[in-house]
Image 1 (tube, rainbow, N blue to C red):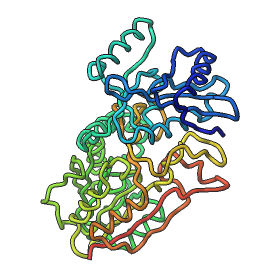
Image 2 (cartoon, one colour):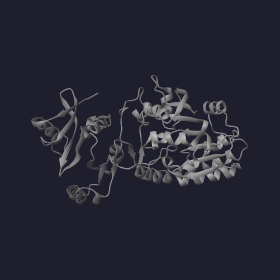
Image 3 (cartoon, rainbow, N blue to C red):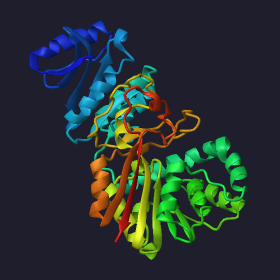
Image 4 (cartoon, helix red, strand yellow):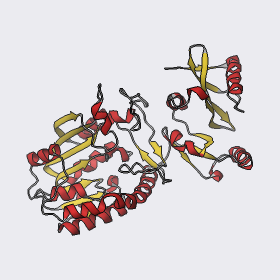
Length: 404
């Protein structure tokens, strides 16, 4: 483990000695906010926040070569997020590090959208043949901008997932009464009672779970999602199954009032909330969709999982992110959670919502919670190896609430 410390004033001379020893051209100024990672008396990592022409710029992220790939850079990045104090920030970085910086909300931007002095600096790198990009961390993006970017990312993922699993899903749903729901959610749905009931599935992806609910005897079934590409898959699955389901492309925050009080059950499953910037508005939408006496059922990934990285195979795994992380996690390496392949994608934005955000959002929307239970099995397709940890966090939860 390393200690993180802010270095001020004359202390930056020691940081510059570190930069030189690492072969870096970066140099700290006493006016910079300099963050170092220390192992005993030695600096093993350094970075700094600079104010340049009125803009906050992240510069000089360096980890000593023998201490790389030990999570030191990520620790500094998380601390930097706190030090930015909600301000917009720019950086020029290596193209292959876009996912690394994306963990705290940096996204690549066209050079002409950056401050002029950064455009000029980037041209210098390009002339030297260095594959650098400009990234920005903006704290003022609108919900619609996030949704549009996520929609593009999911539409890019749809044909990849179709190649991996769709033919098998078509075959399975051609079988009478097919359901891919696990015993836990099947039992809860039967306890609530779905026979003949109207069901709305928010963030339904390709509708495979909604079709499974339909095969449990549900009446009218409507799936809502931002991705028309995945909804097209849902329609084809419904046709293969011979089931009447409706699929509607929309931002779930903006469902029209024509759907108000139209459903007996609002159903939410596996990784829906993380794509939503405004979880409180989401619960208000869910509440207005329900008829009096209707039910909300959620089977979701536990938010504590956002503190870890799915690639961490340690036992115990390292805590990588604060539970109180606020900016969205940004990724441009694709959303193929089945094959785990990487590809250049539209930026996707994952929002961490604390458990208190979820439960209070539910209650404040006028829904009465009747069941909440945490579980130790993975439903995300990313953290299955956590099921076997010696010291295991909760991996998912079930929540049932009612509109009285």
